Length: 188
Image (cartoon, rainbow, N blue to C red; front, top):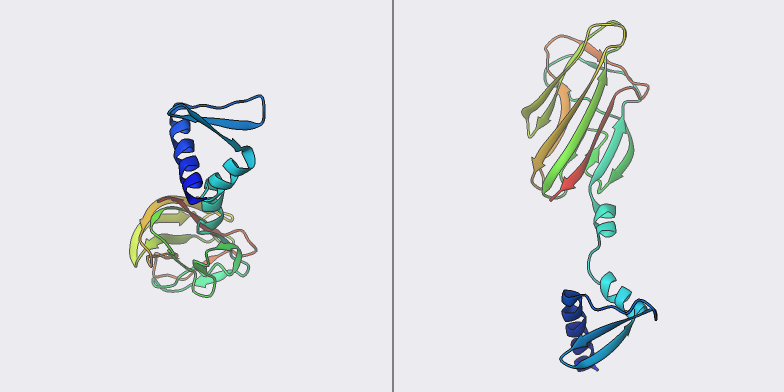
C-alpha cells in the first residue's frame, strides 16, 4: 500500500509539472513512464488539504482592532493610550489594559491609529516600536480635530507597538469609539 501511495504522489508531482488532466470525466489522469494512474478528485483534494493553505494562514494571522470607549486624559509624555474596547484580537497580541500590541510572530505588520481631540483641544501622539518613536501624529486644535497615522513596521516575536503621548502638557483623547488602533500581519 505504501508503495502505491508513494508512486501515486510521485505521479501527481510529475503530472502537475507537465499539466496532464482529463476534464470530461471528473478525474485526473497522471501519466508517468508509459503507465497511467487515475486519481479521483476527492483524493486530489485530500492531498492538497494536507499542507497549509492561504485560507489557513489568513485565519491564523495576528489581527486586532480596538477603540477608545472612554475619553482619556494624557498628562505626561509617558502616557500610553489604552484603547479599551478590543473588538477583534486574533492571536491575542493586543492587551486592552495596557494599550500595547506584542507581536506573536515575525513579519511585516501594518498599523493604523486614528486619534480625535476632545472639544477644541489638540493631541500630540506617536506610534512607538519598542519604546522608540516610529511615526508621529497630531490631532489639530479645532472642533474635534483628528488624524490617522498608517505605518508598515517590521517586527520580531515579542516586539511591542503602542500609541503614546508626545507632549508634556495635558491633552484629552476623545472616546465614544472615535479614536481607534488596529494592526495585522501583512507578510512574513
